[in-house]
Structures are given as structure tokens and as C-alpha cells.
Length: 440
Ligand SMILES: Nc1ncnc2c1ncn2[C@@H]1O[C@H](COP(=O)(O)OP(=O)(O)O)[C@@H](O)[C@H]1O
Ligand SMILES: [Mg+2]
Image 1 (cartoon, rainbow, N blue to C red):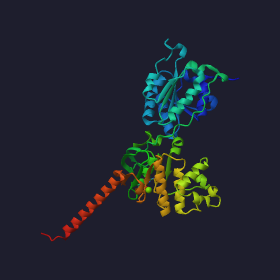
Image 2 (spheres, rainbow, N blue to C red):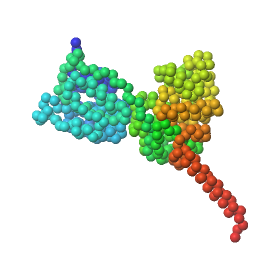
Image 3 (tube, rainbow, N blue to C red):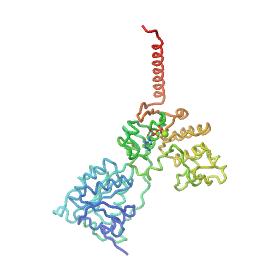
Image 4 (cartoon, rainbow, N blue to C red):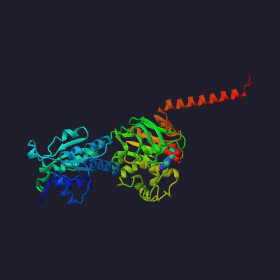
């Protein structure tokens, strides 16, 4: 039978959740965790100030789209971290801050660096707690990571008293947390878009220059606009591929760019413009190259009217499509990519020019798929300059030079466009009449 000290259990549980780097500033109260990090090969990145450690953990979380960890010592170590934690709170970044604390057995006796740390953290974290029982350390670490990364991400703070970190825990006394159930399905309250300004990553020029709208679950939004008006850029922003320079795209209230992509992926479907199929079977292409769930693959293929066609291929769903989908026509490739976007019944789907190479049957299959999924509450945003999608759209957004010219119920927007073009025609006619009139 083995035994561990609390600090080792902290490191073990962090390691189990994939943590490999921790930002810190050395302090006596947290030394037992350092010892555990040595054991598990977790890298300790020492900073000159805890504020830097917290900011670095926040930055790490944002860049890796995973959990960032800062480890700070009791009292002034914790107070120094406040600004970085508040920043992560504003940015909805999944930062886990572990703070040392005075020994439980000496509390209220003027112990070294004793102070009330939890009330300080309450307003700038998603969750904060003190671990008083070393047997429950692993359970608390798991909860901390889970809460920081789940749903709307954000920072959490765990207070770890020195005697809890030094306590010996026999393996048979250890409370090992049961695996947690998957995070609940998104509520499908998608696409709250707030005054969005954005360009291509690393390029200072704004392409999208003021777009704001919101959708209800089950609505279909058609985004129309001339070529180069920013439709594809907007699509990338809407699924969190590109960050916004200003404004936000929120899904279920959280910034889509900072959602943990592995958690977001199953709920979001995306059909990029310019379809790409990859080396692999039809089923693998539809299942996004994750584990192939046969029933889901078939259901997505049926939704776009491809099931019979696929069954007639030499090896059915196991047919290799080849890098460019060589055995498929352009329209079939596009429908296959559409099935991929719909795979797994996502609650929110963005389609960028889904019918650019579809024939009439493909167009009809697309419209039918939109209607069927919409009835089940799926929200769609469809970039298009074809009118067939408009027939099933509830809302319409007109984009020109990256700016939102109109947004609203489809018929209202269509009526406004018609009125504007009639007025333009009238003005042109008057100008022509003016030119033709004899000069006085
Ligand atoms: N990666 C990029 N880097 C720089 N400019 C880009 C990039 N992608 C698109 N653009 C520019 O942004 C504008 C909008 O492009 P895009 O979003 O593709 O419009 P649309 O889909 O409406 O045709 C265009 O002027 C285009 O040249
Ligand atoms: Mg485009």
C-alpha cells in the first residue's frame, strides 16, 4: 500500500487532466506541489511577480484553447495575482489558480501570511473554494478544471492550506473522483453578434466593419452581398476560426473564439467555401475524421439526399473518395461536405455558399435539409448569392464592403431592397428626363 503527500496528489490530478506547464512564483506554502510537479514532469515557469504568472496563465489558456494554470503562494502571492485573474474573468479564459494558504490548524492564531483569500476571489472567479481535507484534493482539482473549461469558460481559484498539502494520504483512503458526465448540450441560443470589427488574422485592415445581429434557435439567416463584401470572413468569425478585433460573437452567451474547440465542435457545423474532401472513405469524410458513428453518418447523408447514391458506390460508405473526391462530381462533393457539416446533429450550422455548385436536385435537397433540421431547433447562417436559400430563410442580412446594410425579417429586408432599387430607378429616370428636357 502506498501513500502520497497532498502536494503530489495535486500534481498527479493536474497531470491526469493534461496540464504540462504551470506559471508560478516560488513560495514556501506551495513547495509540496513543486515536489509533485518534479515527480510528474510538469514544467514550472518561474516569474518575477505573481501578476505576471496569472497573466501568463490567462494568455496560455487563450492561445492553447485549454486550461492555463497559475500557482501562487499564500497571502501576498494571492493578492498579487488579482489583476491577472480579473483579466481572465473578463476574457472568459479557463484559468485555474492554485493559491497557498496558512495551515488550517493555525488559522485565527496569526499564522504566517494568514488572510481571508476566498472573499477576495469571489467576484473575479467563476468558482472558488478551500480544500480542508487532503483526501479530497483530487476531487477538487478535477472540479476546478471542469468548471474553468466547461460552458462559458472562466477562472477558478482553489485555496490549498499548507498542512493539507503536507498531509500523508494512504492510497486506500484517497477519494478518487468518478469520471464526470459529458458537459450538457448547448442550449442552442446562438449567434449573438455584437458590433463586430475584424480582419484576417495578423492583418490590421478591417474586412468586417460593423455587423451586429442576434438569432433565435431554429432560425435560418441568409447573408447576401456582392463578391468580396465579407461573407466568407463573417462565416469564419461566426464559427470562431478567426478572432474579432472588436465586438464578439457569442454562442450560449460565451465568446465563440474562446470556447474549447473540442467541446464546441460537436455542436457546430461549418461548410467552408471551396469544398475540401480528404483522403479517406466516404464515412470518414462525413464523420469529420473522428470516430465513425455509422448511424450518425447515414443520418447526415440522408439529410442531404446522398444515402442511395453512396450505397451504389463500389464499397458503399467505405469507398475511398481520394484527395480531391475524384470519383465525385462537383455537386456531389459539395453535398458530401454539407453532410459533414450536419454530422452529429449540431445546434448551430454556418454554410458558406453551400449551393455554388449544386444542381437543381442538390438545391432541393439543401432546402429540405434546412427545413428538417430547423424544425428540430438547429439555427443556420447561410452565406449565399442564390435565391433558392431565401425561400427557407427567416431573416436576412445584407453585407456591403464589410458593413451591415440591413438586417431583419426576410420579407421586410426584401421589400426595403425593392423600394431602394425603385427609388434609384426613378432618380435615374428623372436625371435622364432632366438631361433630355430643353434648356430654359
Ligand atoms: N486571408 C485574407 N487576408 C487578407 N484579406 C482577405 C483575406 N480573406 C479575404 N480577404 C479580403 O476580404 C474581403 C472580403 O472577402 P470575403 O470575406 O472572402 O468576401 P465574400 O465571401 O463576400 O466574397 C476581400 O476584399 C478579400 O480580398
Ligand atoms: Mg465568399
